[in-house]
Length: 237
Image (cartoon, rainbow, N blue to C red; front, side):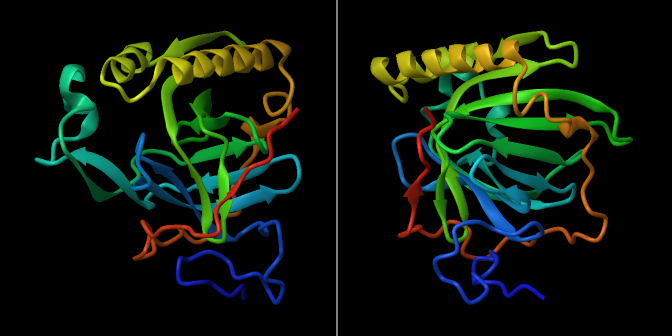
């Protein structure tokens, strides 16, 4: 059996310098708040693939995850947009509802691609989450969300998502003009990748299924700990 660290991540199996995780390992996929090192989203996931070209992880239904909430307990998505990013926040542990999510990230790329299915494994859509390139650490990966997203249908059509949140984040000072311009450029690069229909869209991932023997990963008690060994992912050419 694979050894586990205190974070729930797989121990390096006798090699502390091992670069990649093994399929079936449990790691954390985390997001820090904009302009802060504090983690406000933490999701235990199972590694599907990890190599020079791609990190693929599975978030199973029923997983205990950390979500941001307004300090009074209001879910963030229920808070009016005008005050959503300025009110004090806290976090809450909840179970991930609905079907699971497959997340794909290429090293150094400023977005990840998520796949969603219905409960009966009928594929729904891809979702491109614009974000900082993943930073790897011994217990998982960290990033910062950039608000703007892209939905991609099976017929390869796409549309921008959350443009109102992207604009509000700029108004509230969470996204300086230079960063906002970079995110827009990243978004256009993502659209070009969608239009070209190269990896990962062309790689048959909608037909993928998780190993039924995989247990649902546990949320470690120290899910929010600082990751001193964070390494920035290599920027792709």
